[in-house]
Image (tube, helix red, strand yellow):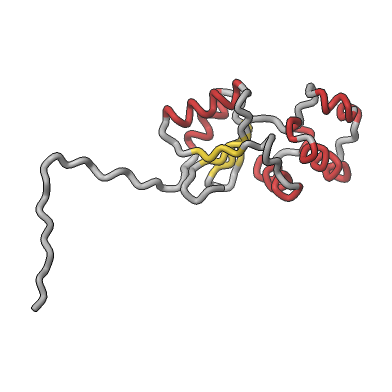
Amino acid sequence: MGEDSGVEMWNNPSCSKCAAAREAFELNQVPVTLRPYLDAPPTVAELADVLDRLGAQPWDVCRLGEPAAAELSLAGWSRGEADRPRWIAAMVAYPQLIQRPILLLDDGTAIVGRTPEALAQALATPTAEVPAPAPADTAAQPVSTPISD
């Protein structure tokens, strides 16, 4: 996750759920780093880490209605611990299979932000402190510079 960001969002710009999440974070002034995961797919290790952060198995966040899922016959794949690497490999090869938006939070957790409740939970999670801008002062303040002899 970016050091100056409170949330990293795996974003699909054409997804209405991603748009709703972007809007919610913007309205609440929560900094977000958008990851275009379709163009920059996660690695196997990254997706495995995100699944651990979600407390989910790959089939829990796999979009089985996608054409790639039908092409691979994913609906018929076994769903056991031994099958996890196969599912992850398929989702990395076809990132459109990954549910969206996935929100990676500063506290080490992750949330699939598809519902208003999930977005509210993400917004309630403490993020890294972002320094507030200094208040604007309309009066010019003299600058005092020490003079050394």
